[in-house]
Length: 259
Image 1: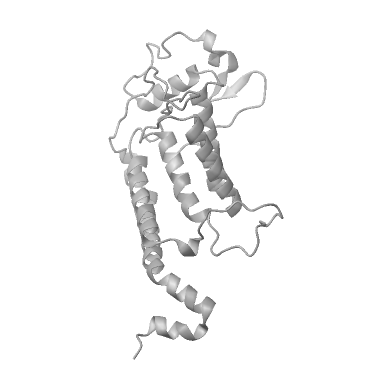
Image 2: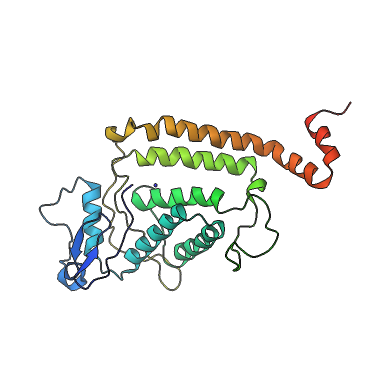
């Protein structure tokens, strides 16, 4: 969903850029930049390099950069946390950023890939398997939870997840998979702000050094088999669950046709 997420160094001299390189804080100040952040030594054919230059040229408090960094932070935590209610909480926070700060997002590049992966993880791992007996999480506080449980996921929702999984694999194999593509900004009225296009240009060419890796082949196929199994199981699972919950004698009638 890729290179390490943005980490900000807490010192007075440097800020951490998304690519991992330390950039002097004064270099990120808007008054120290020219009107065009791309200099003559940059390979303008490389979207990863160009995207990094656009990012570094922005003030750290620029709305687009703030939205980009925050969404990457939420996506990272979505993958790392083991708390179901925390994932549900992050979904709500992500929705807030998307609605209040972002007008549109390109369907390629680093932010797209990471947010898509976080969305897939959230669809499954932000749900409890069954309804909670109470509104408290394991830490004793109020539990953030999605409306339906994992046991309630319908076949069409599993099919959508499978489609996302296939699409993100193809997107991650592109040469522009790690390119920084800033989202557009919206104003206080919710309208998209017209601004100079800061897209570094896309490159859908498949990167051969990743195309043959086991993660995108055998591991991918194994995960696809697991998702398809869950989709098939979702057709019969509600009947079995209801039979067990309501009357154990009904289980046989679910599995065996009545005479």
